[in-house]
Image 1: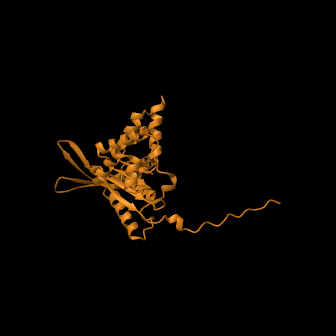
Image 2: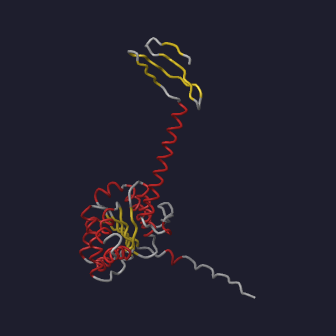
Image 3: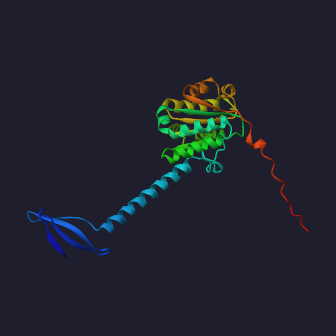
Length: 265
């Protein structure tokens, strides 16, 4: 071990790492105790890389867990704002509104913001709703994507079964997730009991100031008729209505060619 003294009392020495070889350190002896400053720089670099690798693995695992729990349909998991085709001014307005909601989600989460995507079928409402959910999940928040019927079935199952989450536990889960996407909110609700279940979810999120995004193939008056005044008033108080009034893009596409069949001999 090589060594030489400095005027400040520090002593420069060379130590040897069994893995990387010699590296410099500084030592100082105070009242018989020797203090060493310095570590093998290659070892430090390797440890930093391992820590970063572990952090990335944890972040990836957390992201995958949040994505799996979001219940976003597989068909919509590849959606993004960039893949939404917005050529009409109305489409560009819808895209800007959804981007802004996702981009400023911390404010929406603090204020319990509501975004309602309402209008014609086949206009990309579910695409943009899924894009919002995926963006929010990528930011580290939690999101859940469910239709009205799925929400009612989840609550009904909790009421009927003895094992598994109770109806109250399902309701708490739907209330506490950072963002709830309610797809197909314009579907006719079958009974007062189902309407009350949906009201419990929306009212719970309203009271806890939890943000929501709803899609509906209806106009605002039609949505009021389907959901009823109690639910609609909660949505209207915190909600921004984004109209989707252009033509169904699927109706404009040419029909696919008929499949060719091979005749058996």
